Image 1 (cartoon, rainbow, N blue to C red):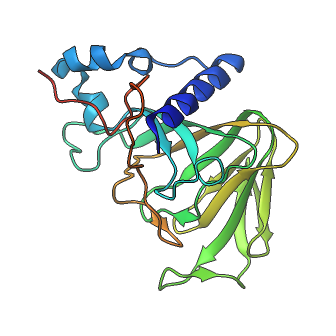
Image 2 (cartoon, rainbow, N blue to C red; image 1 turned 90 degrees about the vertical axis):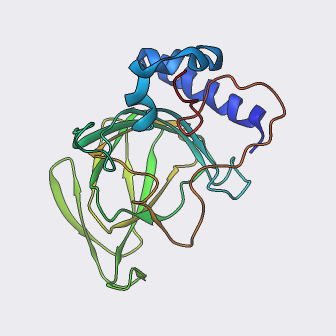
Length: 228
């Protein structure tokens, strides 16, 4: 992705949060220069990969396959003694025409919550023992405490205020329902590890390669410099 494209996506998510009165923690407002001077008091932000995250899944087509998110709180499965939180929280943003890549998680379960804007469509499939998609088996889902069984490949519609519990090894992707406008999503989950806990099918990347065509507006969660 071009840095200018990332900067534009960051500002759009920032504006969406402001529109829906979703206030961000101080580290989200730090400039790249402030990060270069930030000491070890910010190691939790660095080590737990808190902060801004823009992805095109390595496919170079962000406006169709990609989304923007912020990790607000998290533990660290690689350093549980130092960061023992067993939970995580994110805020996500999708525009009309965008979708997130199909994937499941081996470790974490999560709630996806429509925090405001349009409607999100979450497609669900069960997985087989060999981790392939089961295109025939019905899927048990839980929407705000309501248990349902739906056919494989069903798109669950979440209107503002509604949520879906995504269980382990449940394949899911999500997109904005056309004509309803951009969506601000919340994610509440077990400890998040984007390095080892995403099974994408078909395989894609997770963090973008960046072409530096302008200065960064904010640093992404995988770009923080070490403490001086």
